Image (cartoon, rainbow, N blue to C red; front, top):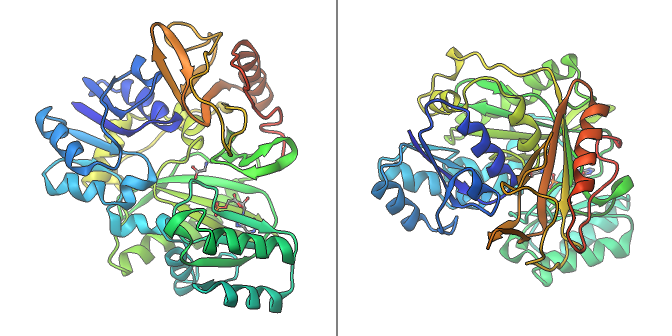
Length: 421
Ligand code: AMP
Ligand code: GLY
């Protein structure tokens, strides 16, 4: 098969590495890919949002399967466009991807179908939001832009003035563009966070092994929210008992709810959960693999990913057994200095071999380019250095040993991945 993977980050690199293991994968393309990905796939320079060019490329090159990995093209109907042209594609259609692209939609869905989540209210007028927050008078309080904002549209306000600043930023200054036309104000929950990704064909759902993301920029969970600074799998807080509760109260009801709304979800459904004293609650849904969750979950997948993708597309997932390795994986993200705010690009990187790798680990490239035989930084998150071992401590040691061998000016990484709640 000829397979095209849409996207350019560490998640896409992890997907491509897993697809490469399949005897069915004869040729893999990435659009647009990145420097590290170019060592594993043929990169084609097509913007992830360009449906017309993507369809044309897939047709001209007889692509058998397209994996749409990022949120924006899913929300914009990339899968619909490919399917419309008779091309097989993995990922939800736009009417189902809305579970991620509109927090107002997902909160209302959970309320309607009794799926546990934080209490909330929705607003389109900044004055009304502040009146509501003042009436609640309970801090911290959580303020979220409705739409996609690269994981950064969530503000946890500790007091009235922070809430006011957040509302201004999102709704008046439009820091996240139209994503901030509506906001969701949520009650602040506490407890360990768990990411569970699941394959679903809209009929049955198969959860993958659990993982834990570290979203804040700095150690001890300080600093701004980022796309994710590191992950481990499995998540130590996710017991078998918790998995069973989640299956019954969250996972299966979500698949059923989407069907009831005539928005059948096919692809990878991501549950961002918080284990509260009141039981597990949904913090967010994503319509895709998490990044950097994919980097720790996919290496543990033993079943052929192409077989799973085909079973999802053909709606026969229930017939497939999916196997996972028992090892623990850890991914440490190396980011550009300044991320998630502004940062420089084009900085030369040292310590990687000619394939962009370091012995003993897998280096997933998130934001790099390869030019004249050298790797350069090309994004906020640059690398996801990932190791597997029998225990978490060993996996972390391996990952951090490799991180220390890699350098570029301004490089920043957290030193406590796998250590915090
Ligand atoms: P989200 O983009 O919705 O996943 O939110 C980003 C991060 O903000 C989450 O991973 C949580 O750490 C935090 N967060 C979001 N909603 C809440 C909430 N209701 N209570 C506490 N923390 C939250
Ligand atoms: N790492 C969180 C996400 O992919 O949304």
